[in-house]
Image 1 (cartoon, rainbow, N blue to C red):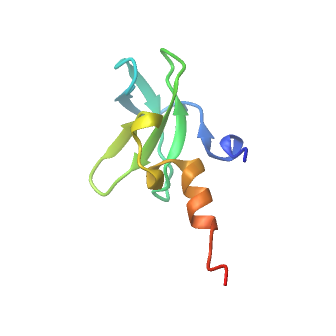
Image 2 (tube, rainbow, N blue to C red):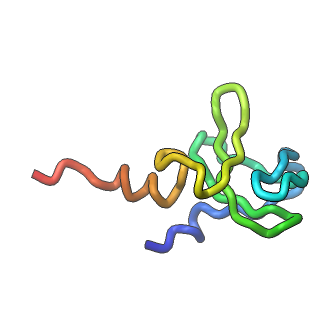
Length: 85
């Protein structure tokens, strides 16, 4: 399932500066306004990671460390499965 085009976000102008979870360099990103986790790309190392807006902070996570509920692709798969009776 290819959902990266819908959920990937390039670092926009005027976003939030945070450290990349891979290279620890500062990178600029803007999380989704609706608290949904989104993919982002580091401007320094180019790796893809997850950005998630939480109640009091913004989290940046490595793909391999994120729980399914925080991974946009996994989340679509899990939430798309309904009652199949």
